[in-house]
Length: 89
Image (cartoon, rainbow, N blue to C red):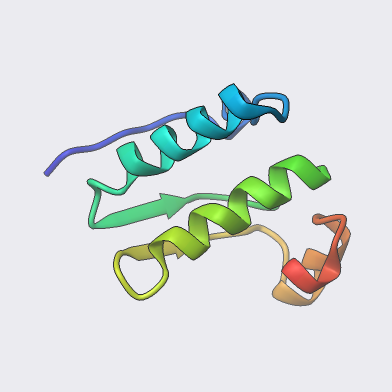
């Protein structure tokens, strides 16, 4: 079983642009090799719009193909305070 452990505070997205887009697609492809991706304590730090967009793209890329487990120290009803766009929470 392969494992990748990276603290969330080191996983900030790169600035927007063509190179950043290619980097995001490469990162998502790299994570796609894992059958189960665990995002632990997702609500630890408030997310900005760019981080929320990256998370949404990751979830969309894995939807109905790979498993994800998301944990949080906040109840689901409070996630609107963590993400700038409450429709994504």
